[in-house]
Length: 416
Image (cartoon, rainbow, N blue to C red; front, side, top):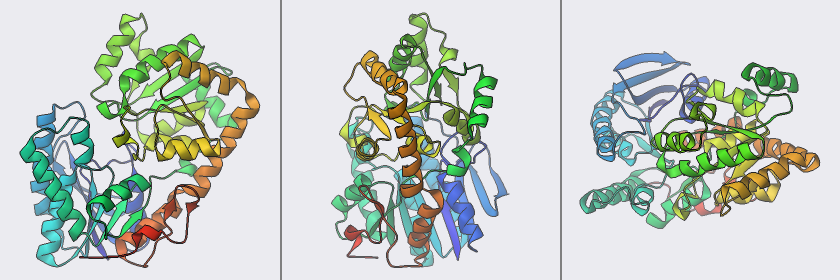
């Protein structure tokens, strides 16, 4: 089967960012499919990556861009990707959002060529930016809502990254088939032996018994980076080293806040790192941190940093609610510090690290969740089924029980 895979923000493991599309594309190729990835980048380029063709369009995008520049980048990619997708003559066009504008090339191409459209929903657009106040123009909001309805209607299948996102799709299109395929744990990449962990810690200049926690992810507005900075200061007061890996619009203000308190920003914010390097930091740390802005609309997020922590068998410290918080806390793989002042949150983290029996139990539970709920190969098989139509029902994800034989709410309309 020939598959066109449209992902504006596609990243390889040698780059900073999530690699879900890279992981799934190379597995599709290994299963005998012909895959073309259409993405954005600094320059125009075409190359082969792990057996699939990457068509990189010259559309720059960065989280630090002003909102209007981001909209221009989305529109520019939408137009260029439509042309590239139409030329590819695929059996299936898979568009993965955000932004939702990636659906336009898929809609145009599949209508013109009578091919199959599959939509992957990574965030609920335009609901999230509208509720957070980032998208206010009434005409743009109306256009985005129309595109959302049309995309759900025309997609043969919709893949959602969390139960909450699936519910969001169902609110707009109640009869639509929705398969839940969350982000995944790359256990082979993140699982390190004790000796490998100690070697990495020594290379970084960390003490053998020093407590270290890591935040690895975007520093955009969705992630409450001011809280992350304050938490890092509070951790320092508890004798815990906190490192923040990533880049984004919130970085500058957070660095200035640390400077005002006499703390060298480079001791905390160490910049973006490729996925393979992030694996070393996360695996060598004692725990990972997950942060979101305090708004319920963000709680359905499928946060890569959480899955990376589980893959490395690290407990996760979360300042937010949502499905991941409920699951990890219920299983004993994480602690919730939402609503606490940073110093109180740091004290709660310190208590976990000092209680070795409780900490080791959290390590075991993180490892168990990674294997039972979120193993990459297991979730890929569900993804492949949704994309290729190889089966009627995927081994869908249920937040209470992991992967199950069926996901009841997918019953109903399977294609428009």
